[in-house]
Amino acid sequence: MPPSPADSSSPGRRQTQSRAGSPAAADGSAASELDPALRQRLLSELQSPWRGLRRLLWLALTASAGIGLATMALRLAAGSEVAAADLLIQVGALIICSLLLWLDRNRSDAG
Image (cartoon, rainbow, N blue to C red; front, side):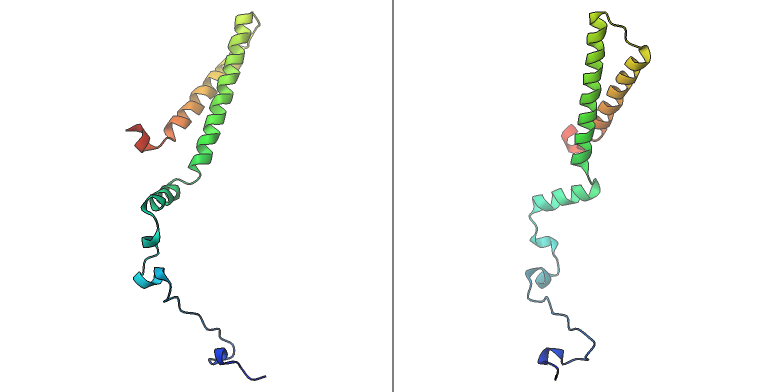
């Protein structure tokens, strides 16, 4: 079977199509097509990936430590015995998780 007109180069090589007709290639910059707000959001995601998921995790862990501490406080108020080590663990978890959540905030939100 004779080669088709598209295969006019060597038989083992594929021809690449030119993208000169695309708008991004016309000015040489693909970033110029992006909305500035979207570009800023993508750049911030690039600088700190998984921020939203991380903040959700810190929030869940802080809430869990707070609920655990509240449960222990209610036990103490009811007259039950609570181990001091368990109480210190809950207080430490609440402080650490709150600190991680606070440190992971947007710096622009703080100002």
